[in-house]
Length: 163
Image (cartoon, rainbow, N blue to C red; front, top):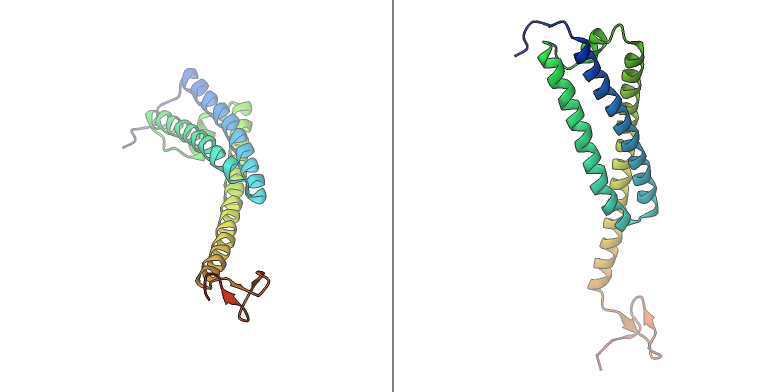
């Protein structure tokens, strides 16, 4: 429901510039969290991952609010939220355009790093599932013991508690 494009005022351009700047800052911080998440996934530090997840979700919500604010501003100016609209409004603002390029680049890095972390999570889950399967299979086999009381993998001993 966009209306005809409206010529942006200097205040509109400044607001857009501030939103882009804030988005660049938030994306850098989000990427740092994703890098930390990757190292925790590799290390298998579940407790630290749980704490980090809360920070990551909050940072994502901040990024979403900035994106929503940018879309509202562009909509008020009769434009769809797009790269082309931002480039049009900021055509005579090279520093803002440079920051917008950075936002696009950072967003791509965040997406790639998030995808990598997703793959690490799937690997970790598969590893945990395999370990759980081994444990469950082992649980179906009661441990057997030899005459000296040492456990033996299969056969040749007597089950604990049997005569």
